[in-house]
Length: 220
Figure 1 (tube, one colour):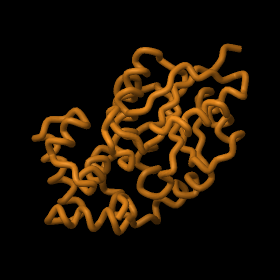
Figure 2: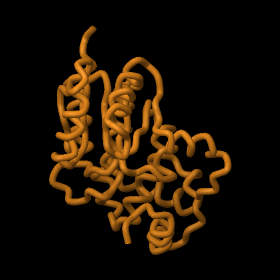
Figure 3: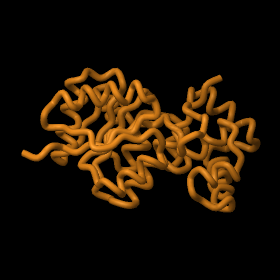
């Protein structure tokens, strides 16, 4: 049996090395490349075409950007990888385990979602099952999905792209900065901002910050 070729993306080298040791302890799995930003993850996917991508959400879009608390890098990598290859097997491995993140990225097309609290055996099992064409979610994530109909989160109205831009706006990014980070025109970002405000019934940018703080999407 050929090894499962894995691209591992996480901006913390120590964390990345730890997950690499766990995964390569199983002879079925081999790490062929590692990335520390969303842009690097996408470029390595194009160059290496791995069987599975194991990816954190909270990493910068580009190397050298000192914003490790934003989900923009991980979500942008997911969007670009799946736009390039709709059949890509992406497994999220993240500490972002509360609504609305799991539902949004699963809706965007990822095949699995694990929390960083998972056991080593569960991580290996998830990679093997995702590679086999199955879906795999941590129990806490599966519970959220099972009860999503009763979730009254206002962010259910937002697309994955809109949620990404909402968090960046709440984090203090300007329209121009967001446009550069997510490879859109400023005019398109402005249109997304208008749609976000309309859907969430917000008038001012300060209300975006307050709503994000209230729901724990950014740090105080």
